[in-house]
Amino acid sequence: MAVRHHLIRTDPRSVWAVLEDGTRYADWVVGTSESKPVRGHWPQLGSAIGYEVRLGPLKLHNESVVRHVVPGELLELEAKAGPLGTARIAIELRPWGDQCLVKVDEHPLRGAGGLVHNVAVEALIQIRHRAMLARLAHLVESQAAEAEERRPLGQVVPEPDAGGARG
Image 1 (cartoon, rainbow, N blue to C red):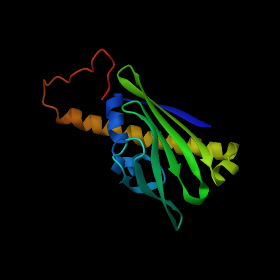
Image 2 (cartoon, rainbow, N blue to C red; image 1 turned 90 degrees about the vertical axis):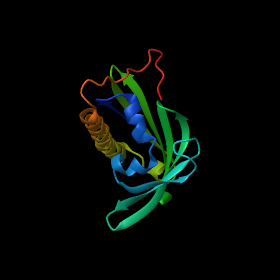
Image 3 (tube, rainbow, N blue to C red; image 1 turned 60 degrees about the horizontal axis):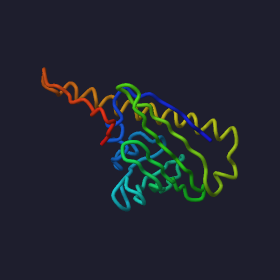
Image 4 (cartoon, rainbow, N blue to C red; image 1 turned 30 degrees about the vertical axis):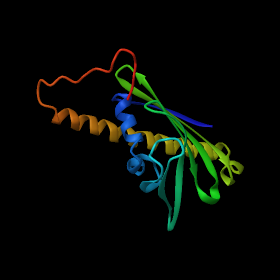
């Protein structure tokens, strides 16, 4: 099971804002392009986004379906990759001081991906996750920096409530 953690230098709400935008999936998920919601209201339970995966000259049209969601905290997807089968991908967000600890956990569910799953495949998934989480961090941290630059001098940013509510 490929599990990777990454500390992102912004709050979980900012990270969730990117995760809940189905059109931004291809901005941070390695190997995908042209993502868009195809069913339901992303990321509600059962909703799906479609995207293209390019493997050299091959173009595969895949989709990811939301199987479990706790808004602001957890997004569990079933990534459908045609003849390669499906995989469970869980993305968990945890507050870490004023930052966000992101944990990605992926493993095959059905199809050929499960049959050929071994240490070498696991290593490739780890490399992909490292790049994916770095892209997500760069995207979210850049947005936070731009928002900070646009904020007028002296404007106070509201703190999250003490009850730990996230939105």
